[in-house]
Image (cartoon, helix red, strand yellow):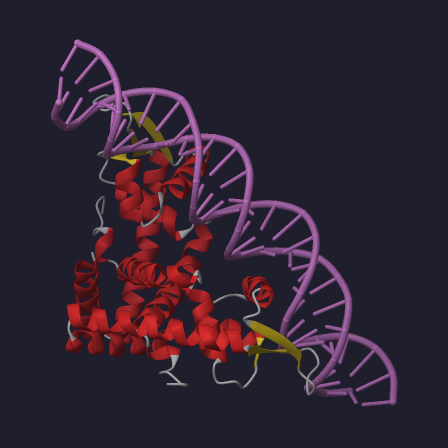
Length: 143
Length: 143
DNA sequence: GGGAAAATATTGAATATTCAACGATTCCCA
DNA sequence: TGGGAATCGTTGAATATTCAATATTTTCCC
């Protein structure tokens, strides 16, 4: 009872470690554009041009509301996105990507795809696909 | 080129999402003890009683140095751990768990094991083991 | 239809994290 | 052996995140 299994065998730890490492590498690629990974997620979600509410966005980009609000403030300052009050439900704010935001999105997408390709190459196509499949399953069960 | 693949298909995103969810659940279990997951990791690493330097610890618990220093400050205030200057290399500080810390560690270990059991049950033993294996592989390649 | 309850986003204060710089110690090697 | 470079941990300032409270709008339902 005194000694439990090492921390490196816990799923929670392995997920944290893998996430940290992959995120760090992606961040390094984005350094050139001076954009944190979260902003890429935001831009990517907005790239359908449809207008997403803050609530939707927060959910999609894995940020809680106040954090998102403040990040969006910064992105508005940088003219990457803009707010439009929803006419149908005036509690809501719909977010859109600006032209500048869209151009940046494409550059970031390209950097992200390079990372994915790099991983697939080093780690193996098969393993990568299988890992994704298992993660999707876990996420689904966990909700 | 205009529309890239959805964000939910990126490995980096799936990892972030899974990590967030699992971590959140673990945090909920730890709520009772009022301890964040990072402190459990620290306590767990220190539970070998050997005395770990701040650098070692930071690496092991996935925190960077200044963050760890400040978290340790809090844990020292809470009498969970204590610092000892390393006699062999006086630049180093060796961290130890107090008796109070050790008792807490056991309670946290138990909560963490319950979570692991819960996951294994809901998600499947086979899938969980396979997921861990793949994550370990990814982490190894990524370093 | 009117008013309580719920949903949505933001704000401000408290807290936590990060970055860059520092002080102390040890290492290296000329 | 002396002294510059590297390592280790901490600190302070700047930045970011979170929690609780708020304002606004909509929904519900009697």
